[in-house]
Each structure stands twice: as C-alpha cells, then as structure tokens.
Length: 253
Length: 308
Image (cartoon, rainbow over all chains, first blue to last red; front, side, top):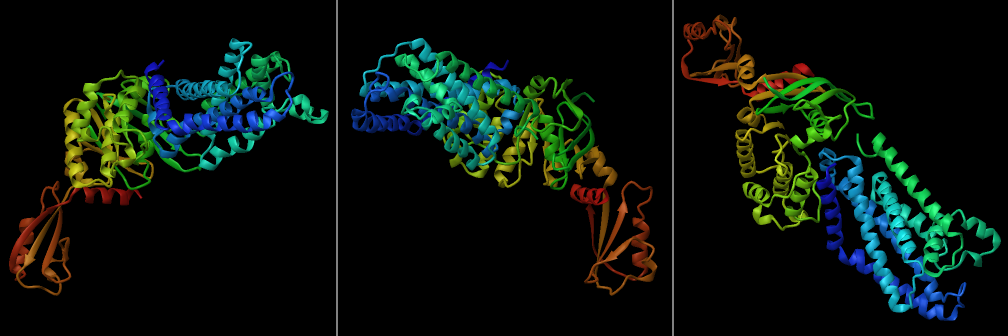
C-alpha cells in the first residue's frame, strides 16, 4: 500500500479547494442563504407547515442535499478530469500506485470537501431557522454515505468524460432535475397519486427523505428503505469503478 | 552486460489497428546512456510509455531490475523516472507543490533538502513559488525534469528532451545527464538531434516503423558504417571527368572545381595513393585536399532509408 501517494493526492486536492476558496466554499454558502431568504422567509412565511414542520425548516435537508450532490460530483469529476485534460495524468499512470489508491485519494478528498460544505450549509441554515436535529448520528451517516457515493459517481463521470461538455452534462441535465423533483422543496405526499409513484423511481427521493427523517422524524418513505437505496447506489458505483479499472476503460491505451 | 531493463518480444497494436511496435528485443545496461533514434511515429514514445507503465503492451514483457513491469509494477515504477515529450503540467499549482506531489506519488517521504538542491541544480530555485502556468516553455521543461528526478530514480527516460529548447538549456540538460550518469543512473533518451546522441550516448538504437533495426555501441557503429570522403579541389575547373579516372567512384561538382571520392575506411586498400597519382597523370593540378567523415546523421539517414 502506497500510503504516501494517497496522502499527497488527498492533500493536493484539498489544497485546490483552498486555492479556489471562493468558488468552492463561499459560493454554496451564498446560494444557500439566498434560498433561505427567498423560500424560507419571504415565500415560506405564507406557506403552511408540512407534516408539522415550518416550511423554512422543512427545506433545510433538501437544500443541503442539493449542494452536497452537485459539489460531490463536480469536485470528484473535475479532480480526475483536469489531469487528463492537461496530460499530467501520465505521472499517475507511471507511479507505483494501484487504481484503488488513486480512487481513495481522489474520492476521499472530494467526499471530505463535500462533508465540510454540508456542515457549513447547516451552520448557515441555523442562522435563519431554529435547527434541531432529532438523530445526529443518523444524520451524519446519511451525510457521509451521500458524500462518498456521489463523489464516486463524479469520479466515474470524470474518467468517462473526454471533453468539458460531457463533464457538465450529467450534473446539469440529470442531477439538478432529480434533486429538484426529489422532494427538496415539497413532500412527496403533496403530489397527485400518479406522480407519487413516478417519483419513487427517483433515487434522490430516498436520500432526501432519509436525511429529513434524521432531522424531524418525518419522511416520505421509511428510513430503512432510504438507507438501503443509498447503499445500493454506492454498490453500483463501486461495481462500475471496479469494471473501469479492470478493463482500463477510458483510462489506459 | 548487466541488464537493468530487459525488453522481450514486445509488440503493441493500438485499438485503431495501428501496429506501433513489432517484436522489440532490447537489453539496457546498468549505468549506460542509450539514445533511441528514429523518425516521428517510429514507435519511440510507445516503447518508453510501455516500459513506464502508461501504455499496456499487446504482447511481450518488460523487466526492470529483474521485476516484471506488469506483475511487480510497484517495484519497477519506483526505479523509473520519466520526462515526457509534451509539456504536460498542471496549471495552478506551484513548482514546489508539484515536485512534492511527484515525490509523494512515488511513495517517498518528504525531503526538503534533496528537493531544494534539485531545484538549484536545474536553475529553478527562484521559481519555487511560481504557478506553473506562468512559466516559459523552457522552464516547464526543467520542471518536468525536476518531477522525474524528485523520487531519486535509478533509471531515467527522457523523451525528446531538447525539442524546442534553447541552446543554454540544452547545455544545462546535457550537464545534468552527465552528472546523473556519474552517480550511476541509467539514462535512455530519444532525440532527433543526432549530433547530441553522437556526443552523449554510449549506445545507439535506431527504431523505424516499429522495429528496432539496430542497436550498437556508438564507436562500433561509427566505425563500421563510417564512410570517408576525400574532396579534391582543382586549380582549374574541368567540364568532365578525364577518361583515365572513370574507374574510381568519383563525382564532379557542378562548377567543375571539386572531385569527391568516397571510400571505405575498413577496406584493405583505400586507393588514395593511386587516385592522386592518376589525377596528377591526367594533368590536373591540385589546389587543396579535404577529408570528410560521415556523421551519425548520415548513417542514420542511410539506415532509415534501407529500413523504409
């Protein structure tokens, strides 16, 4: 095990965060604050509470997930795509390092960064609403699992993409709609029955529902199913990455 | 010869169907400088990339220090440093961060003293905290060398190290190469500046169309394939060669002032004495004599022509 290599990849990626501080940390804080001002305070005050939770409070878990998902994907995909783009990836290929170690370094850094952003958003939210977390340990579990799963997913996108357009297309065209339609801003129960069924095919619903349960003990689907779904997604990502490494798909000529 | 790198029946066919290497066999001796010559697209970079682990071979094996470079990749890659042909560097990190990153990737612990000395040797120390994107092409080339040497490799690959590099850097580079060789590092370089291979290499390999058409000690190569030319300058120009000189391999220059005689240094008799006698007998007066020995470049061009 080349621990030194994992360490430098991790540090290098974290350093990149520090260098692009505004983009990586300040911007999610600002956008979250805007959501709270608009939906939480301005509009939210005229919306009745959902399942006994005030609207401003209700959207906290969904908003956190929105940032977490997009940040995890963009961090991890960019981290591995950029060396491919500049060509400096030759060094990683020629180093005494296994694919697994590369993965741990890049995905570990992206997930850590997302986790930090998640905490910052929750902290920001606590300035706008009175935040009480019913099950902190469960919340942490959901948070960590989501960061790892979606960083892995981002890593796959970064390996697969061979231009900047492909790098952007999945986060923009797939993830954002899934999060918005995944119950970030509403309860699935508020939808007509047909759309409720359709919504259940959206994996993000389970993430947000489980995460929300850890705060308020209210959820759209049972928390066990939520947990199972995120583990399934994690497993799928691991299998895909494993296959890519084994076959060298888009990695090695 | 104690081989530090052994290449056996190595072939590579890319997915496009292009066969870049055809059954290459080559042993590289510990501590030598081997220059690989060949026209663009001959397969030099593919060969280096396979040894370093960047490209997978289609068939054949490579061992470094006795370890297979696929099975025991950690052991072989630790030994090897690579300076790629293209200026493939990140953009926003500093010189210092990037060489620390390289050292760590190869599993070595931080060593400030070594890395600082390395930067000083490469005249990069004052650029230590500069971002890579702000450096000139020559400086980037130096950074690539620093990265390759950051983990103290025993084998160094330099892929076209002097392409697009100014005279000063080229001199620096060869000084570094000599120093590295003195410290026991084995160096394999590709170049199309043949005079450099001639100056610095111990052995020369020529690759053409994916085949290693020749590997030879430089001196032997020059000796075996070397041709000499005797150029005879005449006092008065002639319009054609005198009949009595027709048996010699002579060419007359366009202005009729010079006769060029090509001969083999290895043959028993070069025929120079008789030729000069005959020129005198033909009534031609000599103004001057010159002798030209074919350079490695001429040898190389001949070889590739034959190979192609």
